[in-house]
Length: 138
Ligand code: HEM
Image (cartoon, rainbow, N blue to C red):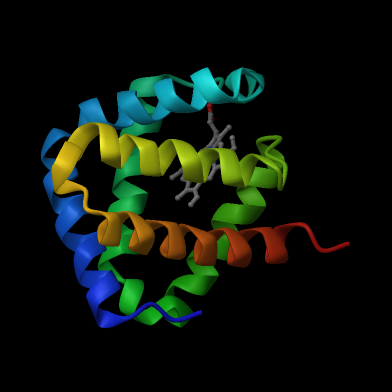
């Protein structure tokens, strides 16, 4: 599913604003995730500051390449396979998506417009579909 130019621009602008407070954004994301889905907490064994930095940096890469999902696919497929090894299950993906969108909304308040929110949901759904379908086929 290709994103429109407008969606990509909304995602880039909103991510750029959030990534000025990278550490706070990552903390917020994990707080949202562990509040909504405490069962995912035990999967994270390494230092959460390092983990948060890796997450934001990977998101930055993805956001920068959104206009060409095909070029991103091999990287995302590898990432998805590593996640199987971390104990991540397909049903965790929507929980992470919701925590991510809530983080954007928490960080940006009214600046996170309904259009930007819808664009993030579309983009995350595309990532989720790609990652889950490659990592969990029998
Ligand atoms: C768009 C989706 C996602 C992105 C971009 C992402 C990004 C990352 C990155 C960059 C890492 C660092 C290690 C590596 O590169 O292999 C990582 C590790 C990890 N992620 Fe994700 N992730 C995503 C989805 C998920 C989901 C759905 C879960 C489920 C709870 C999850 C749980 C974890 C865990 C448990 C680790 C290892 C933490 C540790 O070593 O302590 N991730 N993720």
